[in-house]
Image (cartoon, rainbow, N blue to C red):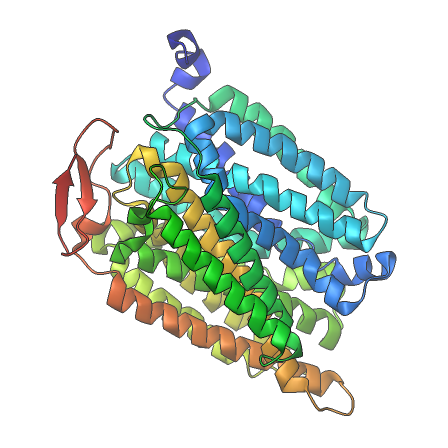
Length: 498
């Protein structure tokens, strides 16, 4: 880009990077909340479009699956084609897909529109996070920026439910999709004014075979898990899960053979970064999957309306926002490891408490405290995760590393939703009739399964996120031509490489 464009008065203003942070965070909000904003509207959309229960699930899954499966390719497009350019095109495409889905006249059109939203979100999200990484390469400003970004990511799912309830109650379920047009307009204006183009240098050829195998592998895996609702031993369930694993194994093999891989294995094979990606996947399963069943409990069992159910979920994002500042200070003083060990334990405890819900339960006693504590725990998960997942990644890999972070969240959410659906189906199976008591028991089983997942996340942090605080947080700006401070793959110290 020419120096005249780089020196645009707005972009050279001392506060320009903070306005850019606002635009990037807004992007993260819209891609995360779109994973849940339609949840509360699903009963109305199902009736309006005459969808059965199995098809209803794909309104959520189609978005998360397309988003997660294509994020790696989106990350490479951002790195090679230009991060700002990819951001702007992703914004436009996301707006058009939202318009199509919002005007859907049949169930398949809604699902197709949601899938198209996921396709463009897969361009938008890694471009946004890569831009954030280059804007704030190190130091206290980076911690603050990632704290804001992590808070938005942590609260976005719950904010989606609140906004979905408001729009469904006072307007129409279609506005849960059409509201994205407002975010798109703000994002396009803000992006044009405050974002600066950047791209990776070097070999910019695309790994199309890698893109094919990872997309097909993740798609088969998620579809196989979605079939588990009818039984884990079903031939189709086993076939698609095994096929997904095989295709992903072929993808890994391809990545070791090509000169310019879609996913450089160095990004994910390091113990610390790999641990961060696994924790992100578990957290995604809880925020996308478990919150859907919370919505069902509030509306179907407790009889809340759309808006009331949305407001009832507010303690979750409030808990995250209340502790965001404290979590940021602790991150700088103690480092991410204690937070990633303790945060999931707090969330697990809240989910176990939530599993004791009853058909005639009191919301203020059985639900609200659990959501508040759960949100607090999530603050200690999401805020350090973005830092740890991107530590030591050179700018050439910034887009793909950002894509893996988002992909872990979305694929974790897709698989988590399928697993939770299978758990729910197993709990209520064999019942002569499914009333409030049976429904509540099924939802309680889902929350227990989610708690077990968060306990596993804490164990992952204990075993994989190891090293001194200085090793786990960025030490300084990184350039493609300068020595890079990287986490050593064999030790808990930093090694300098070229």
